[in-house]
Length: 332
Image (cartoon, rainbow, N blue to C red; front, side, top):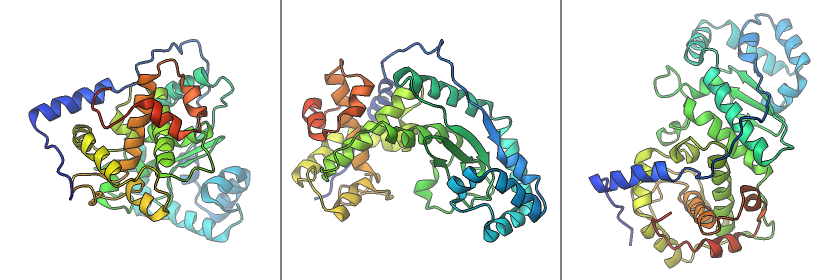
């Protein structure tokens, strides 16, 4: 039997709104004395000025590491050079780039948020080395690339719903391609470096806790960002699943999903889908990721002496789950 989610009644909206505010990381830390370096290299501006194939090739040869990581090829790649030549000399893509430049301006908002994030990471992990930040324009050819030493942001990908052109994805995925999601997305990917796992545990619970830890990391590093931006859910979805989490939890328990190891079964609940129809028509995709975050959040609530670093080092998903005492309850 499929579950019916609680509707967005006035009470539900109030509870959901309270959730979005109250679930921010309550730990207050002082990062004012922490020094970080946030230099954004505007490859979008530099590259869009290149008009000949020779100019493009010369630029790529000077930035081999960038080409390797972002385009995943080599600087002399003729196909890449030809593609960039077309982008740089096409009137439509030039107009699209001008719209992109106007929308993002001098990138001060992005730089400020990255600086906040870097300071928080360095507070918890003093050995953290700031990745190089590069902005690009690819006419929607490529997406965000994040590694430990380089972050490449194709700006046009994050222009939001009013953009003339948008990434070719289903509507339910397009929300996350907007400016407010850039830094939370970067942090969630960067969390992988600190997120210990047990390679021998292939259970759905292990995957759930892994995602939960990554979102908890992002929330700690960006304490003033709404949870809906961290997990890339619309606010309406956050409200519904928060108010219906006892039903979602009951479904997972009744169907013995926590220790499921079948990859196809796990993907139904972990992967991107417009909705998880097995649970209900209002249940969004990646519901197991969200539920993993609830487990991790409860774990930190129940064990306040556990630091963020302790959490991220703990590869025992079952230990985290059992000590969280989570059973689908709304309280935090």
